[in-house]
Length: 283
Ligand code: PAF
Image 1 (cartoon, rainbow, N blue to C red):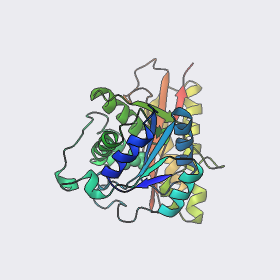
Image 2: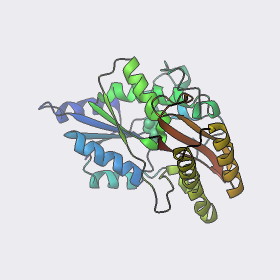
Image 3: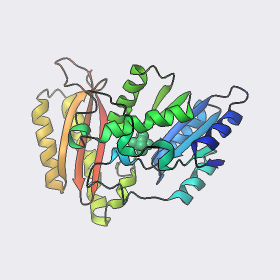
């Protein structure tokens, strides 16, 4: 695996990797890699001849008071895992590569609508930071395919929208959420949980499964189901931000008769803000 630290070296290495017309699959990450990321890289490995992974903790997607400064960094272990997964190229850009004039002064890519609901309502600048950095990374890596996890379902839809709206010739592949044995979705932020909180954390997935079962058994009072799920989380020890049942395709409020739904939730547990989501199918 080659490791490059700036955009000039990236360009040179990509030129070599593509010299026989090989296709490139790209996995953007913020590092602190876990089994969920490994699943994304394995998917990329199966989707194209070349795999490029980036590690960059993007200041633009963190709000004031969020965990940018304390975001876990495990670069040596990340590189080791990526070598085992047969990654071709690891891109570790510096802040100047992505934000040459400073993050505050950079041109932005904004995906209206999806950037303002659910996570966007609770983290108002978050998705503009995500779409901006991902557009820049796409411009540098110029992948044929990019791989994102369903764990960040709203992010996945937002990136798909950005690629479609800006006519970027990139296929966006989605990979199902990787879960621990008790159902907790793998996330770098799980490391903020203490031992007791880690046990409680599994209740988030359990609550989503309860919502799914209730709706699939015929309940159509979604507001009532969401309120009961928030109450269930609060009783377990979370401070819920939302539990919301939405259309799977675009996260709009579901019209009566909508069959393909997604329930999404975000809740604070100790120092960790956890998010998760699962599909609901009405037959
Ligand atoms: O999902 C993430 O880790 C980040 O939001 C991403 C896509 C790498 C952009 O910084």
